[in-house]
Length: 94
Picture (cartoon, helix red, strand yellow):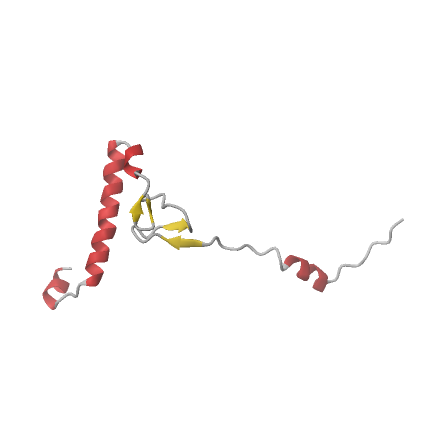
């Protein structure tokens, strides 16, 4: 019969130290700011390296296409607004 070895707290904790979850390594898309895997085309907008490689809108029906286009235009407008400065009059209207 085998004698069971004692597992101390330190042994248990050393073993468990390698069980930690690691967050995936994602990058942000330069066009739509969505998280994508590196070295792959963005599934939201279809761009890779500043060029459109997948026509995302071709696979969508009319209702989904309008929604997707609206989201992309909103992102582009936000980026344009970040670059310009606002005066007091424009701030009061917002």
